[in-house]
Image: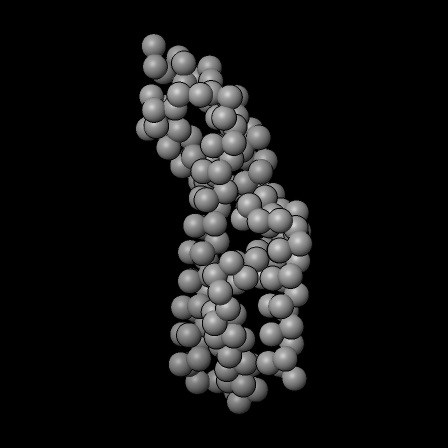
Length: 159
């Protein structure tokens, strides 16, 4: 009984969730993982969902949070790789470039979390302000300001 209700109510949202995850992550395997995790959470909490009219928003929020978690995980992996590249010996210009990357990463990491996330979504993942607005739940003007301040901080550091 529960399985049939789940299939009938939740699974029609699988395709829209996948499309949204692909727009945010731009990686098919990551998007599929996000949708699978979202659907698993929907299965676990299926009996606690009382109002199905809010289900699409709940599913999209869970999916957005999963996307943010994946992006954060990739950022941490990227920071680890950058740190590891600094310890290797190579041509002086390569070392200078690695040091500059680490310094820029430090500038970005010094930003408040919301600003840092908006900047990473925009610059590393090529997301539009509208997509960042949907993920973070903040207004377009707020995202615009955070992006401009973040880009200005990086420009000032590089000058």
